[in-house]
Structure formats: C-alpha cells, structure tokens
Amino acid sequence: MLIPSREEAEKLLSWAHAQNPGPWADHCSVVARAAEAIARKAGLDAERAYVSGLFHDVGYYSYRDGKGTTCHIYAGYQLMMGKGYDEIARICLTHSFPYQDIGAYSGTDMYCSNEELAEIAVFIAEAIYDDYDKLIQLCDCLGTAQGMCLMERRMLDVTRRHGFRDFTLTKWDSYFALKGYFDRKCGINLYSLFRDELNANIFGK
Image (cartoon, rainbow, N blue to C red; front, top):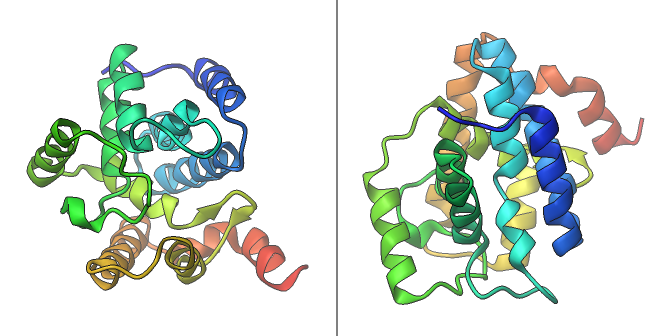
C-alpha cells in the first residue's frame, strides 16, 4: 500500500488549500489529529490514520467561489488515484457514507455527472469498510475547523447547513454506532482522549 509521508501529505494539503482557501483545510487537520490519537490507542497504524484524515476532504481544492464542477468526494478520489494513493482515494469517497447508500450524502455539492454518480453509488454499496474507513467517518463527525467537538454538535451543524434529509436519522445512528465501536476497541470513552480540548471548546476554559 502506497501512502505519502506526513511531510509530503502536509505539503500537498497546503497546495490544495492555496487553490481554494477556506476552513475545510483546518477541519482536515483536526480530523487527522483525532484519527492519529484514536488509531494509536486502538492499535492501528497512526501514520496511515493521520494521512487519511488529512486528505479526506482534499477534493475541495477544485472549488472556485464555493462551487466545483464535481462533488468534493469525487474530486478528491480522482486526485489521489492519479497519484497512486488508492487507499487514500478510497477514504475520499467512503468518509461521507457511514451508512452505505448514496442517498445518505449530506452535502449540497453533488455536481457529479450521471456516470460519476453511478460510479460512486456502486463503489459505496459494494465497499467492505475496514477500520480506517470507519475511523475517518467517525473523526469527520468529531472535528470542526475550530477543533474537537461532541458528535451531536457536529451533526446538528451539518444539518443546519444542508437540511434534514431522508437518511439523516439513519446516518446519525451510524455515527453513534461508530463511536461505540471505537470506544470498545480502545477500552475507553474516546472523549477522554480530548478532554481538555473539549472542555475549552464547550466551556471556554
């Protein structure tokens, strides 16, 4: 499996952010940091987890004035596949689908062609998620551009921005199941890994 080094990954994210500046890159950094910490506690490859988190939203590099010619998940997938990072490309798609149905996509940027949508739908329906897919899905729901937060806050923020949809409740249930899975895998409540940061972000101290 080919993945970039941490230094290479951070340089590539900096390039991507320069193409489309915005808070999405800070969110990626927070997700990467969370994934690394949880992976280390769970006995997973912390470097792979970090790089996967760093690139999960890299497809936003292709946006201009808040719009893209394709959705960020597919743009990221294409970018990573073009560089030979197949497993990272996979994360670019799977991170948005803890519930394996293309209808569960929360964003409003599904600008893909019919052919691209069909490709994504088949990929997601047939994927067998491993712990890295699951970990980045979870961390995507734990991190904002400002830092770590409770899942409920992140889920409500996404719903306020993109609306309540047919699969919203099912997707929320999937996130809670993911947290339970990694709580058990780590032998702790994951929030305890980020206690100080959560306290600061929630209570301002």
